Amino acid sequence: MKPLGPIPAGFGTMHGELAIGGRTASALVKESGDTPLFVYSRAMLDARMDALRKAMPERLNIHYAMKANPFAPLLEHMAELVDGLDIASRGELAMARDAGFLPREISFAGPGKRDSEIFAAVKAGVTLNLESANEARRALEAGTALGVAPRLAIRVNPEFELRGSGMKMGGGAKPFGIDQAQVPTLAKEIIAAGCHWRGLHIYTGSQALDAAAIIETQANVLALAAQLSDEIGEDLPHLNMGGGFGIPYFDKDEPLDIASIGTALEERFAALPDILQETEFAIELGRYLVGEAGVYLTRIVDRKESHGVTYLVTDGGLHHQLAASGNFGTVVRRNYPVAIATRFAAKAEEEVNIVGCLCTPLDRLADQAWMPRAEVGDLVAIFCAGAYGASASPAAFLGQGPAREMLV
Image 1: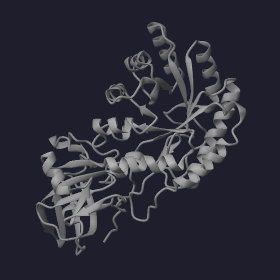
Image 2 (image 1 turned 90 degrees about the horizontal axis):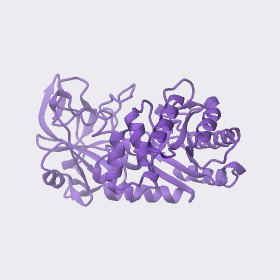
Image 3 (image 1 turned 60 degrees about the vertical axis):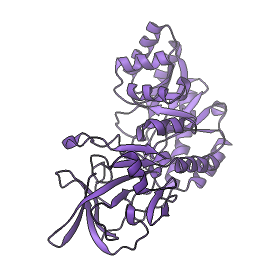
């Protein structure tokens, strides 16, 4: 038997089933039309933001990194909750505007921006987080062609990284950002060229559960921002401090201690150097805001045995839940939080492997999991499915197509 990850707090039970937003899993599937189905809880999104606001310093803005989940109804709801939005493509820019975000609330990061994307961003008036000197030149040219001062910030590739992060985005050679030693010269050049200087973006890593590591990194980010601003010779208008806040996916993972992070950051803000006194600060979070609010529901279509092993075969799989299958950056596959949604209150009594419908041995949703006995027609719930599921999985693989989605 292999342990399952912890089911996030906030889900209930009705009539023995998993309940989301006050409705049973089977009722939600019926309303949507079929499985597979992603369900996102509005109440859990609200609760996460409320807890974060209470823990963080009042002057800290919270941005949503929409790459985590761009589902339109969810994005519209997030527009009511957060202070800004971080995008990574022209397509995301269009979705952001449709959701009601204002240009001044949007920043655009990511290497390899096309000329058309830079032009569209400058025209719309969003902030471009520059990833190279070449990108800076093209942004200035777009501004000249449009007759506007482009809103430009510099994404910094710092010498340090976020310890224990799932994906390291800073330190050493990276495709992201501009090496910190090169930042002052480039900043002076774009400011002299007449850009609307919007400051620095320092993103070091993601999916960290160690509060001490995040506190250390935030201190390093503030120190570097002050150093670079001194070298540039300008007060810093805005600092995107990155994110890195992780969520528990696996057995023995513990929730991130955001209270200690907020307390430490408040103390740092109280002792800022003069050059950062008027700076607007933001953190950029994706999965931390939406990951635990999502559940993936998939129906068991077959129950079979092979060499004494019981398999529950579902109509979903890695084409919607690539990360849960262990094929999204995981070295050793471990079980996500999983349950039999239609037998949520039942006692576990058998060991099963839960697999998807794809013709590949990689399509695994739970290995050697201790579960209530389930039959064909029962629903399986994969938790922590609110981030990097529907939009980051290969939905077109084997012609399966996308899953349904709903916000409740």
